[in-house]
Amino acid sequence: MVSAQNNDIDTATLCFEVKADPNVTNHQGLIAMSFAFFFKFQAMVDLIAANGSTYPTHRVDAWRGIMSAGTRQVQNVIDWESTLRIAEQAAIPPETFFESADVLEASEESRMAVLTEQDHKRAFSFFDKSVVDGQMISSDMRWVVLLCKDVYRWFLDSDATSKSCFLEFLEALKPKELQHQSKVRRVVCTRRAVVGMKKPYEVLCSPLGERVRVDTPVCLFAPFVTSAVDGLSDVGVLVWAVTVDKNASLYRTLIESTEFLRHKIDDDEQFPLHERDVMELGIFTSKPLELYTVDVDQGDLERLDSGHFSPKKRIAYYEDQLHKAVFDTSEEEAKDNDAILSGEQVGMSTSLAGGAGTGKTLLMTKKVSVASEQKILVVSRLSHLISVIKGAVEHERDSSNVTFSTYDDLLLLLGRSVTPQSESDKQNFPLFSQVQYLSTIHPGANSSVNFLDGFVGGFLTRRERKVMDENLVEPMTLWTAFRTIKSSARCSLTKQPLHQNDYMKLREAFDLIPEQRNVLYDLYLRYEEWLEQLSYKWDEADRLLYILKLGPSVFSEHSFKSWERWAYHFGEIELLEEDCEAPLSPIFYDMSLLTKLKTFVRLTWLSSYE
Image (cartoon, rainbow, N blue to C red; front, side, top):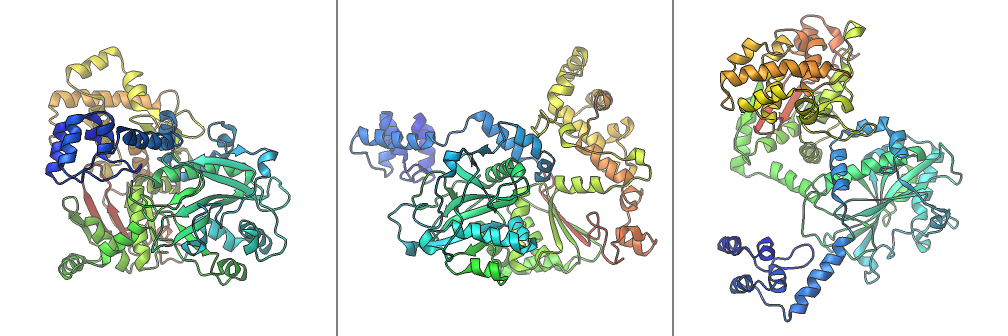
């Protein structure tokens, strides 16, 4: 299709040689011929037609198709700066935002808009045909409330009055003919935001009490429709959060980030026609949401009220596919997996190395599902992958004793858990002062610290940059070298960066000659000067060395011994929980499983007692 738009005959020919379908449509319903015919690329038209496509009846047909698609698309266009802001915002750990609620509320860019009195009069109803096209019949729909996990937990922990207000709110969203109570308070929305880039939808904020006060709970929710499964579509509201009004902008920001991470794949799902600004919640998603289904048709609201509700998690299609891929293996694959897992021993670390697609992560997921250890940790640098593994494991077992974490989140917890003997050694690692190769926008600050501009462009002298050029040292080479100096394997023993002699003795990498390494180490010393200049700055290796040097003896001692040996053989009971049986949270685990911790090296670890 791209070839047809650019009149690229060679690429189009190559596509047809590998059996490309000329009649496949994009998400706007257009085919390659539509573009080739409209732009009068006759050679391309002839090529596409020769491979099985049909001509439009008239050129005006192609024109109408392209123009109608363009009109729909314009409504969803978000400028590049906003897109970049949301992308950088989505990369920030969610807990970071909870310290910035006032800042987000004060910012015009992130504030959830307050509605006028006129807007308050709008009537809301989300469980009937006002959401979807009037041609749909009720037998094609299921009326559903989806509760985010934290909302369901809030409900369970709330008092009777709060529960009653929440259930009354959900009842009020239903059409009048379906409401079980004769007098139901009208839903009033006080704030509104539109989130999402590809398919925007509205998020609304409504108080759960009649009197709106500072401490009155408010509910953030969005109308949604799902694609049809077995001829049935869900229609209703997704309840994102229950909080107080001053935190509405905070949760709007979190929802915006979640939506960016959720929508990263295109698919062929077909949604029923619906009003604008309604969320399309597909069975395919790149980041599953943890949602619990409340089936309004089947009396789940009443069960919530009576305490007899049994939560059922909404499962995304590809989570189910992963589950099948892990647990519905062939007999031969099952034997291979069992053979690998049976070779493990307690206290033994196992490394799985293999090419892409050879099943390393799937095997690790199966290991988690059958492990009997008391406390298990699963870590990856990829938040998306952690979500996938968690979904697959929860299909198979109770995962309450399993911690699923990204590498960054784990280091954040470990850094906060370190308690040095001297208070003067205590360090904090705020995100806005973390050194990144390129800057990352954080709430409450202009940006994180930019290595490329701040150090290379702003701190180094012209002479030093000239030395870099003369020795063919690029800024990325510099950045990589500094990380090697501060986080090489030897650093885990010495708890400090490499000395210059040790750095020079490292095996050859990236074809660096000794002269280049000398330049790199000299500039590393300048980098450490820059970190201490004016305001405190830190990089990922600084936090890791802090944990290794000042953390518990398992980390700080030169020779490694597991927490089990330190606690039970050397009597360090402070490494245990109060019951003196389980390892101290969130630092130690009975089993640690790590996958995809490096960007360019596919390596999976199955590690016990670390």
